[in-house]
Length: 281
Image (tube, rainbow, N blue to C red; front, side):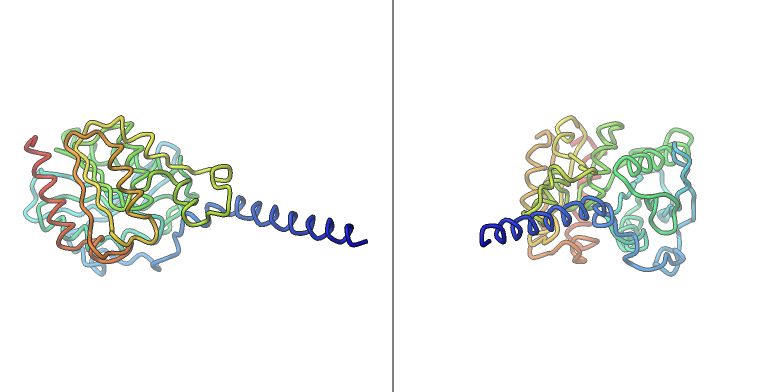
């Protein structure tokens, strides 16, 4: 009788574990993509971007994406930066970064992914890759095929999007803020008790892609990042080609602190990096 109860208890626990793992597998994209954070999308002026214009971008699979194009004053044909957002909120949360880049003469395209900020569709790794390609096409077409140097600027989840696009269409420069080695490694960091390597559908294997690149790369990490450990960012940096790569660690900062969004050290390094990239140094 006791043996039967033990077996029944073990079986119940095993079934509960399987049920939890199945539920996490089923809902994994709801854990990765968080478009509802940050509230409704405001007008660009309300977000502190009076020079931004509303634009729409069409993807190869027929999804229409909302975006802002921020033009510097005075308008110069210098760098254009395409921002690839993290996994939460909308482009308005990146307004401080875009404003500071524009103040330094840099044009900025801020495009929300499918499923974010009222855009149709559902976010997936392949879907975000299509969104990224569409953003690049828009920038190139806007300038009649001569947009000047283009940089991809990915933050957090967006670093995986930016690295994949860079492996397909290499930019003049690549900036990665709080990048990860792969989504599998991020999941394993947060949920060490789960078989993330078997569960994840969207994997973003940046560490397998970054070694193919030859463009200048700037990696920025927050020293106390509780979402993506700085050690993962450093591993990705170490996997990048040694030529013209740069590393910036923001002391004492966590993942969402202003210092790693648009702080002085970050902006100064980005401007210096782009200047040196354009001069071939």
